[in-house]
Structures are given as C-alpha cells and as structure tokens.
Image (tube, rainbow, N blue to C red; front, side, top):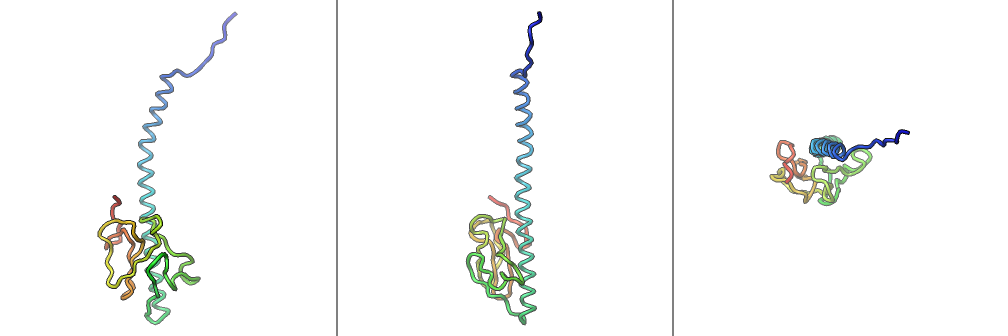
Length: 144
C-alpha cells in the first residue's frame, strides 16, 4: 500500500510571494497618492473657473454689479442659487474644514505659499477670485 502524500507550499515559496506583493505595493501606492493629489488640484481649478464664469454672468445680468459675497464658510451670496451654484464650491486642494471658507479683501492677490486656513479669496472691488493654495497662474502650490 502506498502512503498518501500531501501537497503544500513550502515556507520559501510563501516568502517569495510575500516579497513580490510588497514590491508591487511599493510601486503602486506612490502612483495612487500622486493621482489623488492631481485630481484634487484639477477639481479645484475647475471650481475656480466656474466661480469666475458665474461672477461674469451675474455682472452681465445685474448691470455690472458684483454679487454680495460675505467672508465666512461658503457664503457666496447670490451665487449659491438655482441660477448658479446649488451648493458652495469646495477647494479640494486645501481640503478639510476650511475648504469652503472665503476671505474677502479689496485688491486681493493669490497666495504665495500653501496653507489650509481658507479655501477661496474674493476681491469685492473688481470681482477677482483666487483659489487658496494656488499661485497667480492658477497652478497649485506644493503641499508641505
């Protein structure tokens, strides 16, 4: 009579598979993180362009008057309505609790460094809008 043989993986074979999976994870995870950052920057740029277009539409409909934007958490005034935005835009590049916060300042300029203190900058004098964490060319500033 022949004794039954059992088949199983050896410890070396299992270790080789684990090492290969680790190498693949080391390659894929940084690429995934880069993609997430790129999508946040692209989304913010898109929201910025929409805000600027809606301010232009508002001015055209209201004899060159600018919308009444109040500093604070997503208070875009008349721009958040059925005619424009149904909800306040989010700055995904800044993210977090301050991604909807608007800073209102006359003669506003874009940010010089990345931060998370607010999401948008609005100039009530001429209607300029800047995304926080973006430079004067609307490019995202590097995150720390």
